[in-house]
Image 1 (cartoon, helix red, strand yellow):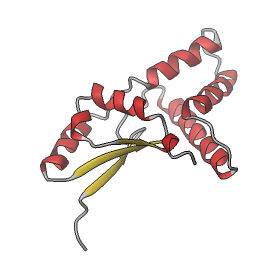
Image 2: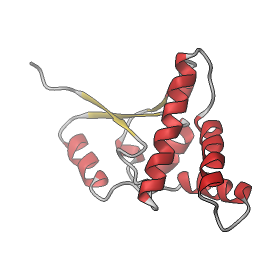
Image 3: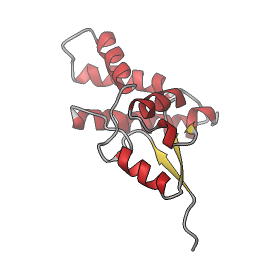
Image 4: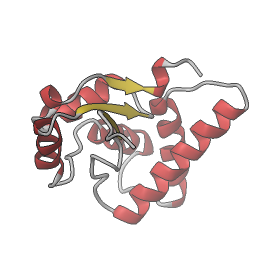
Length: 138
């Protein structure tokens, strides 16, 4: 079997760290993906940020933040655009590209958000296109 020449990485959780509180962040993110997949299966479309907003409002109804829920949701969504990558990602990406691999990313979120995260991590130039399911229209 020939060695792969292209590797496609998921962005959220695979390359990035969702942060703290880990249990709540992971549960929230899983609910966002579940709802996005369910909508797509039903033939409906919604952006990641729209679904994330709705799920956060629902989550905060059960885990009341110490601030206005709309303000809390806005803060979380803004924070999502500035997540750090896992510590081993930059070196791993550079090792793969140094070995001749072509790397791409695919995200359930918007491509500009992935671009920003990868740029902030200093690895954007090591990766090819940042693809998003939102650009597929399905």
